Length: 150
Image 1 (cartoon, rainbow, N blue to C red):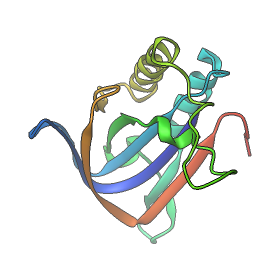
Image 2: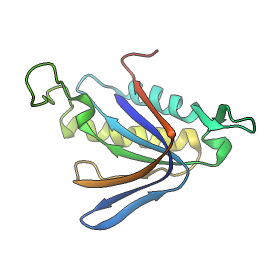
Image 3: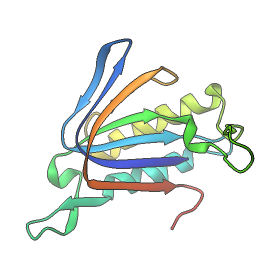
Image 4: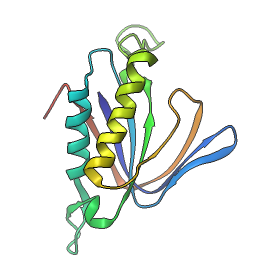
């Protein structure tokens, strides 16, 4: 599983002209799932995100976690995180998991993250054509891949 995590001042998801999710200060997380991913990947990522210290303390250093700033989370599925651009100019998405495998892992990641944080997580709609608006704070953008645990 791959996550693109952005620290945001606020973010929204709009589907068919209707706003379906909104958060204030927190994390906007785009989630890409590949065929080789398992529940263990989702669990590791949920724990990692919940403990990530990306918010400024009183001295301006990134030392505070989401919980410590009462931050919110918006999770959006994005299969294009597994795009291969190795050959040609049209990306291949062959590594992205099919919906029947990806949806349970996406939903499982959300549930695990809610458990880690002890509060609800806002979401997009899996497979929908979404408009995602955000104000990146910093900017702070972090790439996390469960297959490359650095």
